[in-house]
Image (cartoon, rainbow, N blue to C red; front, side, top):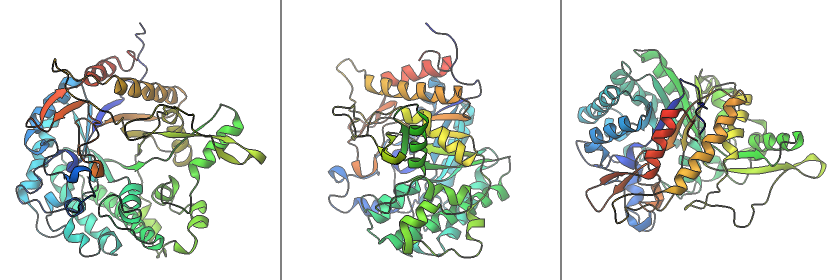
Length: 455
């Protein structure tokens, strides 16, 4: 058996979550509504017409969950603050009970030796602000910055790892353009890109608020979704094709890497995007890019699957057709660990920042067996493959600082409701949210303790 660690000694072994997906108690202690309450009330929007009012009950049971994190050996726990739990109307009066919850959570994590990695926005936009125009309102960046200041004032004496907004490709692209997630809008391209422009301004103002108010030195990053690509072979032509695909922008959708990252990391929209979106590109006001482009300490990327690219005729990049019968997860994403090697490389090449895998995991069908155990061998295999690929990226010199498994607990998986299981810990929603660590929990514990040698 190999006993050589495959990851650096200071590598952050983590697991991730989001407030609306695990907290439950959505109407407790003065919390305001988010767009997900509105969305979930519309029949047929969410699988089985459920919502996040139950979730995993983390709001009340977090001490039990933090004990499990300590048992697992986590070095970091990524969680989000629910904006409407802190500011029920999105702005104005602070809900002390809501802010107190996160205060207690941070103390509990630190006492267990788990570093809090705080995401300021993970999709639960305040309904009150949505009714005032939401991300289309030019005041929305300032609303976000004011909220960030409240959280930073309270928690930055202990929290030192911050992320601004999670996956703009999703909450703008899927929520405001395709309409399949909250708030369920199908805006025109011009309006959707304007909403995206405003969220990038919000990111910049949020970073400024963290830097200005942090009571301890802060490391600040983003947490973007990933359009994963990798070369079909190690041939230089195929690597160049994959690199080109990494930077590509299609006029057909908002799902890409560079439109959402170049403004905040390079201070400009990518040329590929300007060509693709044409007249729909937002008008850039004086100072916009300067606001968006704030110094960051790491690039957080949520990476699940990847597509192979090769050099086609004339050297033009072309995608490789998916093999018939290729392994698929329960939500029909491809098993494609190659992206965990190549995407950190391409990201670091373009942006020059250390990379943190802020989400990676697999949708599975998990239940307690007759003996009470939860066996999820597919998750063990999936994560093992991705970690091996990530170890190769590190061995090749890519600065990867951490890995956060999505998710720590089974969660409310947005429009999929409670159909999908992605946690290391099984939640029995029918049995008072009973917790059962899965086979993958015990496997990941060994990986962490051995720094990857057990892989």
